[in-house]
Length: 243
Figure 1 (cartoon, rainbow, N blue to C red):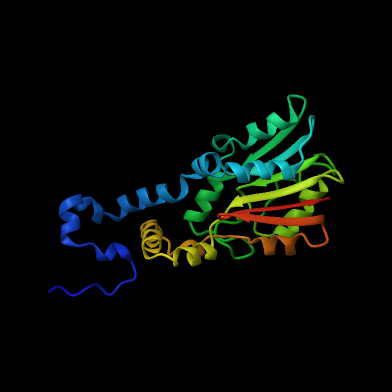
Figure 2 (figure 1 turned 120 degrees about the vertical axis):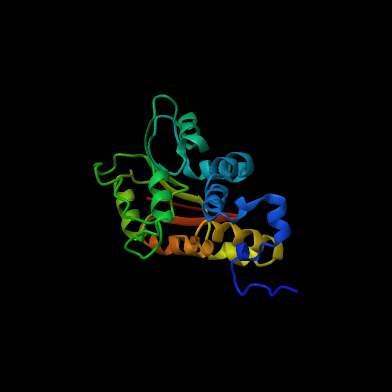
């Protein structure tokens, strides 16, 4: 009888019968990395469009867009998730959208373990609004890009600077963090699948990734907005407030 491996990495527990069935390729760390990484990070359009329809509609309703609005949009996978098109449909052709898609920088810095000033992996200084004058935009939307800002107090202040008073700033994300671990631990299979994907992609788990909870966003925007509010649904978080 063989001795089980002493390891917390599920990939170290592959048996001879696994290799016979699936081939030596499953022992290749580079191949594992490629497919585990693709599984973990290539699902935003599926989640946002196919799965999160009710949350998505609530998100846009809280932004309170009007025809002719000028909107600053910061997000990940903006085109494939349809965020820009959704906003365009609500503000009309007479409206204006200024978009910054951060997905490539987000993937690169996270994969490399780059830390921002806050010490969070895959975060950096958000300076996208600094080139614009005061009250240039009607609304600001940060969709699927909350986790990558390294200082939300600083960033929030400048985003609000370029907004008109009385309008809404909105932050939204289908987030991953320590809470994801706690949910997965409720089921052995789900925890195993999660561990296998993260370890195969070179990380220990979802807690390695930057995440801002609704409570942290409320603290960051304390005193900066009126009527701040949050809502969470199936791992998707929403924050909004009025300048």
